[in-house]
View 1: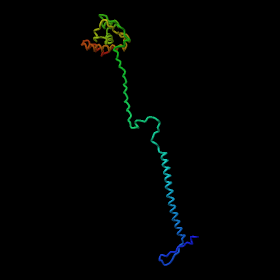
View 2: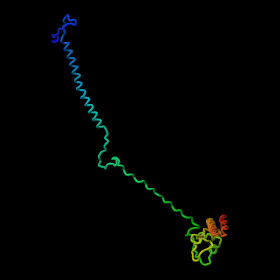
View 3: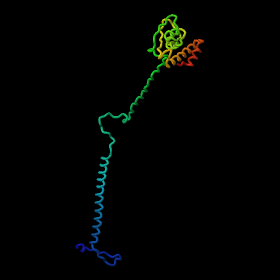
View 4: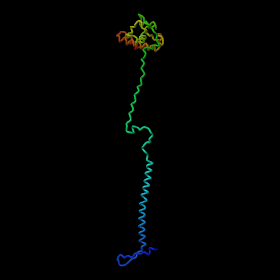
Length: 217
């Protein structure tokens, strides 16, 4: 090889003799050092570029995968709540009152559709009318209870001439009354007893006792 022709003379360490070294070993050492330097330089140039490419790719992927918080513009008006403007409070519901059905008053004796009309003439009494219509004057409190709301004085012993009295139609007959007729007669006797009591009429206890005892068939 040509490198074998190159030789270097140098003194030994004790400087008493001369040594000859081949230049080839020196060149090989220099070449090795040069290659190492080139390798380090090339790596420093290549790796930063790869890192920049990888980081650029990752950033683009993150940008593509990251969800966007901005809603698409659909042309609809912006929400006032999202813009920080408080929405107007909804009015409270108006309570709906349910009207209660009126309570119908209990009929004193029976409905007007089941009655007969009698015109009072001078000298008439409830006893006489009951005896004439039913054949039994003991049923007169039923006539009084039926017409009590129309009497001005609420006095069983007083009726005015010219007024019209309503005579209820019994479910049965006075001689053989129905159970409903007997209940009506008992209630009518209690009404007479109450009104006699307000008038301090001494007959009030008599009718009170009869109402308490009741009437049976």
